[in-house]
Image 1 (cartoon, protein in one colour):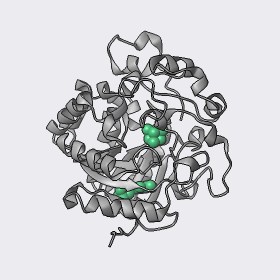
Image 2: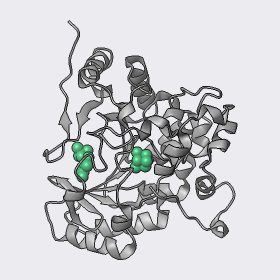
Image 3: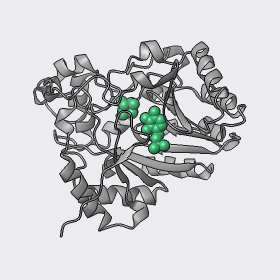
Image 4: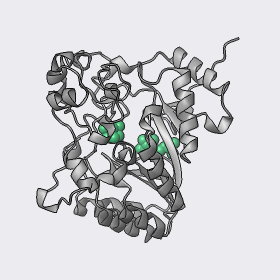
Length: 342
Ligand SMILES: *Cc1c(COP(=O)(O)O)cnc(C)c1O
Ligand code: SF4
C-alpha cells in the first residue's frame, strides 16, 4: 500500500484528511504513544522496510499502553517473524494477477466484479493479502477507470460491483460519488458494495459528505467493514456505524482469523455481540491468505474449524460468521466445515 499524499494546504484541522496525514509511521513515535521502549520492537525496522508501519492515532488510542501483546498493536506492528521465508507463503496468495478483466477490474465469481479503486489505506495491516499487490500497474487513475467501466457496461452479467483497494474510502467523497454515479448509469449494475476498514481505524472518515453520498445513491449500497477484535469497537466507531445505518445502507463485517489476536472463542463471541450492538452483522471469518510475511498469524484448519464450532454453539446463527478460505480458481469462497466437540 502506498501512503496518501495529501497536500498540506488542503488540510483543515479536525478533518479526516488531517487525521490521515498525521497517522503514525515511525516506530519511535508509536513506542512513545504506547509507553513502550523502542527496544521492544526488535526486528521492526527491517520488517517495516518491506511493508511500512502506518496506523492512525485514533486506532492507537484503543490499544493498551505498555502491552506489547495488545491485539490491536499486533495487527499493525512490523515484527522479525515477517522476515522468515516460508515456502507456501507467496506474493499473490489468491491468484489475483490472473483474474484481471480490465485494468483495476478483477473478476473471479459470477455476477460480481471487484474494482481496485486506490492503493492507499489509512492503516497497514501486517496480514494483508495485498501487501505486495502491484498497484502501480493497476491503481485507478481516472482514465483507467474508464476502461474498467467500459468492461462492466459491456457485460450484462455483472450485477454487483465491489469497490476495493487499498481502501476505497481513501478517495474523496466527490470521487466516490462520481464513480458510483457512473456505475449507476449502467442499467444492469444493481448493487454497489464497498469493502472498507477506514470507518474502523478512522471513524472521523464518516463525515457529512460521505453520509450524503450514501443517502443519495440510486443503487443499494452494502458496506463490508473489517473489524477483527472487540477492542476495535469503541464508542466512536459505534457512533459512526449508527450514522452509516441511518442512511439505509446494509452493514456487514468480515474478519481474518489471526493467531494471538482473535483465535479465541470468547473474543470472537464478544466481537459478534458488539458488532450486533453497533448494527453490523458478521459475514465472513477468513482463514489467513498465505501471503509472504504473514506465516506467524496462521492457525491450523482443525483448530479454526473447532473454534467455529464452539462459536456456533454459543450464539444465534445470524451472529456466527462463515469460516471461509479463498481458493484460487474456486467459483466462490470455500466454506470450511464446522466441527463440534463430542
Ligand atoms: C472475495 C471476492 C468477492 C466477493 O465474494 P463474496 O463471496 O460475494 O463476498 C468478489 N470478487 C473477488 C475478486 C473477491 O476476491
Ligand atoms: S487489510 Fe485492508 S485496510 Fe488493511 S492493509 Fe490490507 S487492504 Fe488495507
